[in-house]
Length: 287
Image (cartoon, rainbow, N blue to C red; front, side):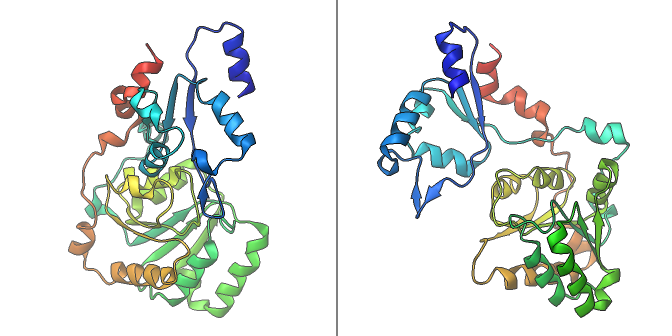
């Protein structure tokens, strides 16, 4: 805020663009972006801050609707607030030599990607679910760095379920090429997070034709515009059962049913090139 104010007071003629990653912003169930819920201090801050940017963007439909119903809602009518979803850059795959497979060529593989063992990622829920699911001839790869505090939970999981060692696999840190090769072979991407802004892993999974099984967190609803999937309420009483039942349902499918989980298309509308060339906010920023 101070840099924007200094820029304006200093006579800066350029445009200020603010790309928001709107996460949890509530206290005791009250949305603190609504004027009536703000303290006097916050009202003062938002009053002086709001006029400074020329263009605001948010990443998700939910964030956009939240701002529509907040102190910032009038910015939509003024043509200053837009939704700009996260996209994918296909050149990444070209540079590392990964070509997206046809859906019918994918393997019986499920993956999750992220910082495993953090409170946010809720990996303990995933292990609870996998302890009850019969994966049969499927493999489940947990991809990403593992918190030291969580390694004991993994050891306990294998100790209690020794037959899972060959079907539930923690890769640890791997290269970008290896990560995208897992996306490419996988049919299903699983996310058990308690909360997210707009997880890039969801964009990656959707672009590379994964079926999404996720908690209903930031970005999950949006990527289902492009791929198949199902969402569950994080923290809900039945979330453990819902995840387990959905994964078991997929494991039990025939090859033809698996091929029908997602549409085998190019997903051009998910690319940054398409998004930036068609989004109204960008046309205002680069004028």
